[in-house]
Amino acid sequence: MSIILGIIIFTAGLVLGVHIKGVLFSRLEWSILKWDNKVFAYRPAPKGVMINRNDKVFMALRLPTANMPEEGFKFE
Image (tube, rainbow, N blue to C red; front, side, top):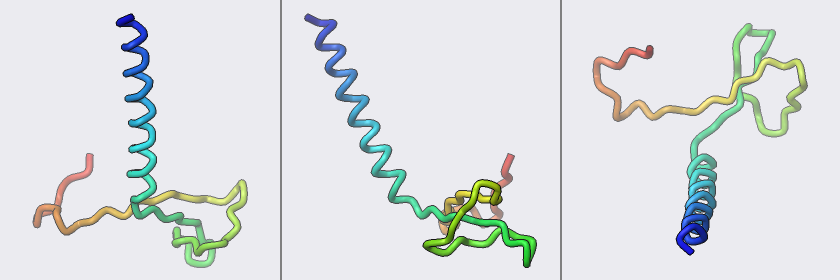
């Protein structure tokens, strides 16, 4: 009986965790950056743009800098 209860609790926790992660992940401010040969830089891709197999593309997340220290921080 305790094994069945453990499996049920584990499954419920897993399903709840996957759902919460999906909701939080989709609320972040994501943007697609696509390589532009005209300016030799990545530029934000507008909605509806076609992304092909050989395109250079990044998926970027905007980080709020308001709560960062004044002196900044070192990325390692």
